[in-house]
Length: 293
Figure 1 (spheres, rainbow, N blue to C red):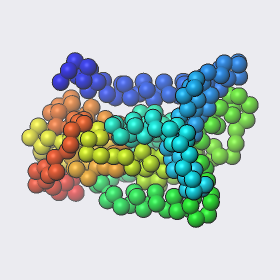
Figure 2 (figure 1 turned 30 degrees about the vertical axis):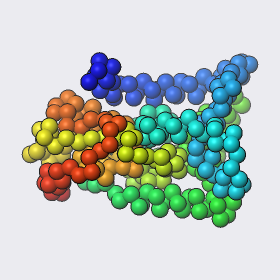
Figure 3 (figure 1 turned 90 degrees about the vertical axis):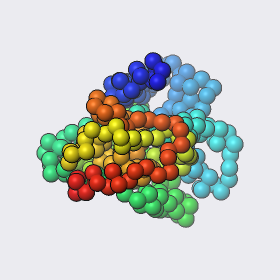
């Protein structure tokens, strides 16, 4: 492990928080500077221009193709950077950059205080077809009814758009109520359901996942929690996943919280860009799962 990699591993949680809060500062400063006449950076997380560089939410690129039945090369090019990032690093935009995820994590803290029973749920990884069925349903609505549904429910774009409207025009739209509705549902009824199941932005980024995309790798021989019912790596997972199993994707968004928690003890969990072994000693994992159940 290089010195840089060691530094990253030792400060994963802190670095993620810095990026998250830095993102909030960025989306606040953009409309303020625009109002003052500085327009080198314009836009929101729907679409943003940095000088001559155009970056578009890949989910909106997919929506445009379905609505127009045409492929526009400039639009594809504008969605290339986030897709390239997802190809190598997975859905890190969701866990490290998306402003809604930060709000949802704060909501999660509130939930654990007022509804601690929900915090003790088993950490079982849903089957991938649930994820893709929801995403396919969203795309079907767009294609069949010609409704720009992704624009309406893309929370990164919606939140940053509302921030821009508030700071530039001094107004807020009714769309912000949708964000609060999702947060309320997550706090009281369905913990983290939006990022875990329903977000079309995250699902679009997950489409390009390959065997070489950044992933969580579990090394059973290094785990020191064989007799523990609630493993630290599961307790800290924002999406209530079990990172010891190979079926963690496409749900996992590589936040690194499980790696950070494990690093302090046995380092059985690590990020890797290498192909994950096709099989791991599942008897070890299944034994832990039975203990948790």
